[in-house]
Amino acid sequence: MKLKVNVRRRRSNTIRTIEVVVDKRGRIRLLEDVKLPKARRALVTLFDDASRGHVSETALLSEPALAKDWSRPEEDEAWSHLQSEP
Image 1 (cartoon, helix red, strand yellow):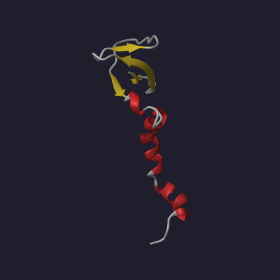
Image 2 (cartoon, one colour; image 1 turned 180 degrees about the horizontal axis):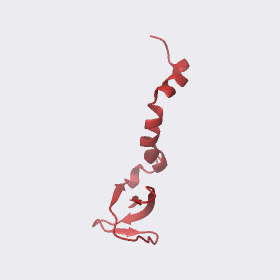
Image 3 (cartoon, rainbow, N blue to C red; image 1 turned 60 degrees about the vertical axis):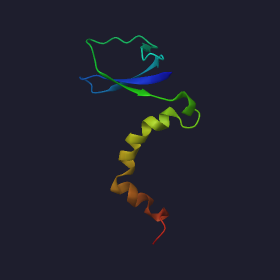
């Protein structure tokens, strides 16, 4: 099973996404070399391989960021002309 691991760097406050493989026993194998100045915490998101064809990973990972933008009053106003009146 492939998944992505986000690694956050403190200084620049950026998040790196690294693709990994998790085997049946839960062991994680990085698919690329990662150099870190010290140990870091990471969040792991597991994707069901069966659902990969239905929804793109990019869409799933983008949804929280886009939801913040979509929930702004400016967005409601910009799209209000498309809403039906009660």
